[in-house]
Image (cartoon, rainbow, N blue to C red; front, top):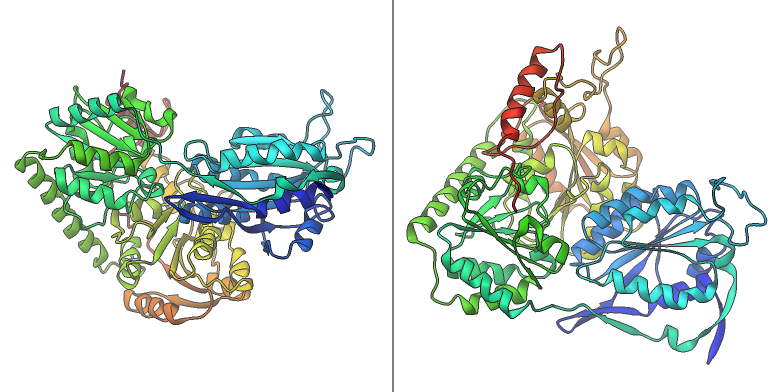
Length: 617
């Protein structure tokens, strides 16, 4: 049996019927559609959404932001749910590219439906069309190809019969997921086809827990039994797999210490006896020292970014080996390790069974515990430093952490804050720490906070955002108010780009171009620009307050918890008061020749640091 539907109507009706399932937990895969309408989608997808009122439409303020919101929603949902994002042709579409890149790099599913040029071409060039003298089969939506895990352009309505299931295959894959882009020419959106009714029947996409090869698992067990100084690096895959309890039991059973990546932070509670905390460039002393000495690194659900590996300098034991557990074969084979392509939770359970009676040496276990206790004292000292005013950023993090409850969520993405949070935030819940650090996108924070709140409205969400990121994309405050999703936003005002300013000074460049100052005598070295973030946030409809001391900040945060709508607290911090790095290094190339003595010194130190970089063959 068939019935005529437009391509847009068929798309929305199909998406409504898709469910995901894992471990018997079944739910609709799509929770609605974000969008901004223009001539490229208003009469197609817009009409279809109006007709399908049970598929909720959300009006956002920026196309990039809506993709961040969808990605945060998916990440908070352990990739079992997501949102659709639709835009018009042209700038509306290309605005989504940054969000698509962030989603794909972070391995979280989002479905993008950008409008496109006319398939029938006779009216070309249409408004906002990019023309090519080499081909008529080019539009700005081709820019999505390198940042999408699946990309297609729909020239005929019946192509949806094969394109939409393929899109779902990728979106629900634990190994291949990321941004999926279906470019929809504006004329095709409105064209009708007799679609078979069974195409719109409810379909459940089972998200599997792949079991690894038994022989590879056996070899991994032998590697662990033979190691003297094993170390687990827990990545985001531990959390997506819902393997945190299995990891806690395995670490306690074996005594193997655990270090966490940015995406993996929260895999263990901060006070678990085997927890060393953050790993790598933004890591703790204990994690980095034990990584340097480890003879076996057990990577679970990590893609080994340069921040995790300290630009391939973290692991210095000449005999170090790697045992990598990952659902993605590409990541499992990194560092020439023993690759077990498998789900984190089922693998940890299998390892626990096969390693019964195994435990690291008491001396090694105790050393890890000493590192953990020493770090806890270091954090407490940073939290209570009593610097300023203005306060230090570490003190701000301490106040927010102490006011927040265990189930609350802190969200951040860019600047100096992610590194400080990675080191300092005391995680008490697997979903309590939400960092977009795969792409580290300025502007993600507020939009991401909205997606987190939409995914789990019962949790309080604390958006930690620097003034630089705030100025890039604060307008989703309006969307949070529109949809009645309350956010607690902490704007850290340090007068510019603190992270890059510090990096610039470390590279000998004196923070050039990183502070918000008036131009004077030809350079940006005049007085600071007095941006009033309190007034700005208030103009968007949020309740706002300014805090200058720890006590004022604590009071403001406690009042935020009781508030019914999005609240913004602005706190000035000292741009020069940094949380130090610990036992690590990051490869940021420095000019080989320069007239600056500071740059020359930085280059000399850089060349020494590079000597520790390794190939793992």
